[in-house]
Amino acid sequence: MKITYYSCLLLFALFIISCEDTHSYLIKGNIKGLKSAELYIVSSKDLHVDTIRSKSGKFTYRGVSPTIDPLVIYMENGDAWMTLWAQNGDKITLTGDVNYPELIIAKGDGANKLLSEFKEENLSLIKEKCDLRDKLHARLKNSTAETGLSSDVQLSSQIKNVDQILKTRAQDFVEAHPSSIAALVMIQDYIFDVENASAILPYLNLLTDEVKANPLYDKLYTRCSNDLQTKAGQPALNFKLTDTRKDTVSLETFKDKYLVLTFAAANCDFCEPEYAELLAIQNTFPEKELAILTVSLDENKEDWANLAQEKGIHWIQVVDGTGWNSEMASRYNVLTIPCNYLIDKEGIIIGSKLRMDSIQTILSEKIKKKK
Image (cartoon, rainbow, N blue to C red):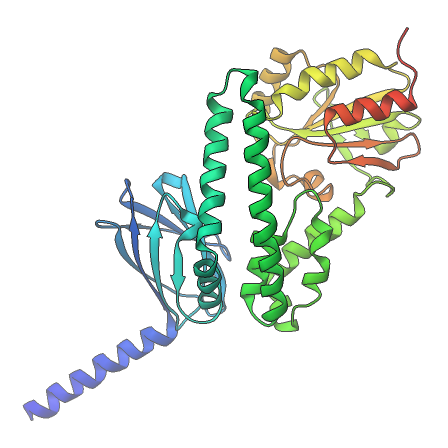
């Protein structure tokens, strides 16, 4: 009887383990260099957040996902993160260094296997890109002399060269694996260009219907479509917004004027130099010929109000309070800020994702300056 009893217990335990294997996924991690023991795992599908603790960089996590979905693991209090793909039945092993999150390898089956192989094959290139990027960020943060400008340009050029090599190899990867979710990740991580999002369309078209059913495809296709709709020569997309003076503004508001449409935020360091340039543009051209509209992506309207007062901004401003969830920003394919468009008197986009000096040059050809 005892043998039968223990045999039943063993069979029951094996049954439970088997169920766990097929009704959940398992992640085992060993990440070097972690200073914070806490990690946060976020399910991109429902934004569910789990907090786990690592010990000497090691941790185990079991989750549930009937379909293959992205998980984002945040480390070092959110300063570093990585994405992997998981579904029930997967056993995934993570190894790497928190100082190089792009190089953390997620070993497993399916998409993770292909993605880890790509990383391992291009390990030196990806590490070179990370080192160059960190070096450039450090220089930009600490640089005070103009003498460092040529070095910054050189670093940027080196990063672009590495990016182009990785992009070419990612394109080959997509052509070789059009039926894998990994191809979508390659498009997102290595081929997608915020300045020319529609360039990914040929690679999206290569994917099988099963891969296209993934939400990431819809996200990338939407960005691609939005980019096509906001290129120079396209009619500007209409809008109806309430500005900081409680007035309603739309594309019709700026009829018979050139419109500089800008997207910014109070906490955007790269936006700050442009406010003075916009003031210069406003002071250069007649008000009857030119209007400026800034859409702030701040969630806290007071943040923008304080900045506007500090910088002397008195052109038309809109703060919808939704941050990066702004419908206006989505429609105009705003992926980074600052982001600037120039729209002519007929409501046609004549410049997208422009620098301020380019806007100044175009306007100088179109409008007579103030006397």
